Image 1 (cartoon, rainbow, N blue to C red):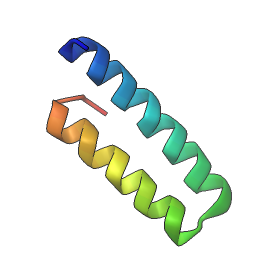
Image 2: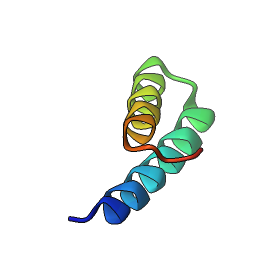
Image 3: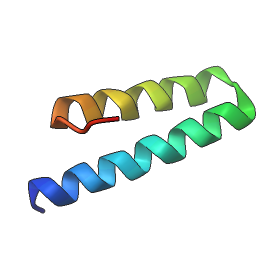
Length: 47
């Protein structure tokens, strides 16, 4: 998997996790959202 593919996948997961968290506002969804954001930051994805 190339870096560009990993970045695209990480951004998709971030957007999905954010939308899901905003719907439910649960703690487990917040943790998933933070983890997705962290992954994006580590890969250098601009959010």
